[in-house]
Figure 1 (cartoon, rainbow, N blue to C red):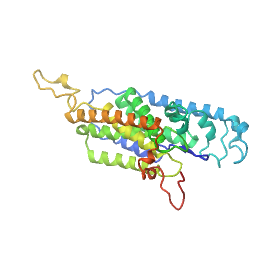
Figure 2: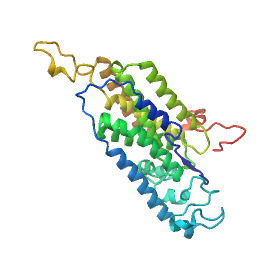
Figure 3: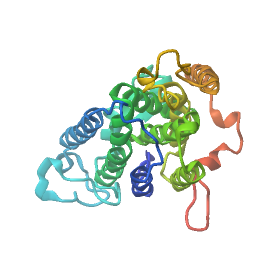
Figure 4: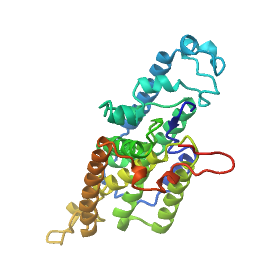
Length: 327
């Protein structure tokens, strides 16, 4: 968006079909007695995001608040729900001022204004219809299958904590623009898919194919983040948070555990999880706690992540002859 608004690009519009195809041909071996959940939380997240966007557009009220410097409102037949001029917001959405007022992530307000709640509220805001649709389609394709396999508690925690982790990293490195979007949370789900594959490695068939497919999906989506006006730090922070959370929350019992009650008397029963799963669990939990704690301390001390990493800005935008990254 104009006026320094950063969208958290879809987690993504390029990856949603690949993620869906990955799951349709997923090489899981799931024992028949393993519980399959009914997905309701992910659809509720979609409804909540759409509802929030409608409220944002109602408050935005382009016909009343647009001063006409960038042109007239788009889709005027929608009345107060009409969109800002495309020169101001090409994604068919509200103004940056409206997003900022309603909880967009802005470093100055988080740190100087003690408005830490923006680290959460920004996850539920979107820069426009295109931004919203890309993210919600990705959430449906990725999240529903995960919720069916692991339940609403695990998926809900991964979604929210990954979004929170993405907001922390974004605030540390992007301090002159506002940022909105659920993409940090969506990248957290992608990260959790990867760690779930690794920690449950022994129950997979076609492991190499599954790993390569998933890594390609993630790489493509992260590569999109180097375009200007896309908050790739939120993507990276969300991905890392979800990756660690996957080791903690998405463990599967090793093969044979679920059907142990059908074993003959006196048969040796395996432990529920393998030793390496416990090791991953402990390491991931420690890294997650340390990472979030250090990030929050640095953030509220007013530190700029770019002062500690001179090249990290290239992770979010790579200047070319076609565009520049500015600040």
